[in-house]
Length: 403
Image 1 (cartoon, helix red, strand yellow):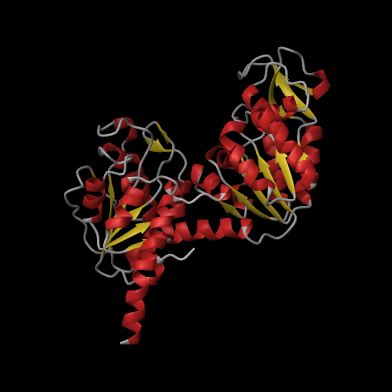
Image 2 (cartoon, rainbow, N blue to C red; image 1 turned 120 degrees about the horizontal axis):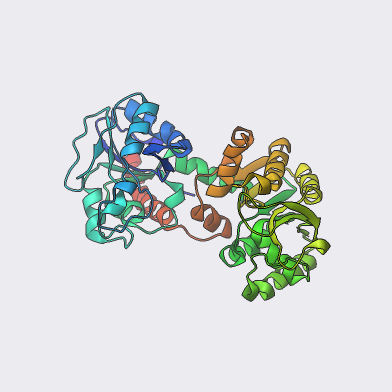
């Protein structure tokens, strides 16, 4: 992708507005996972070391737009960010009409979703954001699929709009896995709904050498081929789509791996009694809540042969230990594989952190929906506007070079 990069600019004494994704979990008033904050540190350090006045903005949670919600305040994020940067990072509550920030310092703007018009990409709001800066840096890949005031809108009106280091790293990691991957390329997709991931499954089928399915998504595919799933979650209106995808995969010679055995219980609770059974032994009132050991062994065999792995979605209800063994085992197989591994999606990343395997993955994407849409081949609005702004600059750069 052809985008102006922040690292190519002189930011000294410039007011630099950086859109990050600091939508992190907050527990008892403190950040409980700082992975997204740490991922943004190279961008922030670069701008600060150049002597820029760094103004950071992000969303957090899903507050009712236009209203302050203390549960969604970025105050805990400002405190943690200051700790990670080793300098104070004040939280600016009222920032649309101006932000006090000296060169070499950083401030964090309060939740962008407290502003009316943010999600509707209101032009007047976007212009107010753009007026805060000399340079706008889009660094939040996880929000790049949303045309909002703080992502796409501000990039249209800022004097200069560019891509931050984290955003560039995300794109390069995805392009490495998708455009010219080392083969075999194996994709593993879990989660709950086929309807929300049908497009990515169809897109992946054109790219991969093997496709592995887990989680509740696998239930719908198992039901489509006559497998026993008991009372497990299944999208009955997607059975036809699942069957067609299986037929298409068969015609292409691309194997789709489905569970052979599963872990079931009568209810999805921490006190439920978990049982490992073959699919043929699933009872009418059983809930499939994880894949079984024979399945993870087969999935592990496929993953061990891979040179590139794309993974989105856990294999089961890993938040409950009794139903997390499948996810733990396949995560371990990905970590041991030696393949270039690209993992995206909040639940999948949470599983890696739970099992202490995050540092053994080649690249962990901070994106969720943006990760899926990029893999599908969709145009992401916040990336498209950066490319457009870069094209607008090209003639001016060429003229300046010739003078």
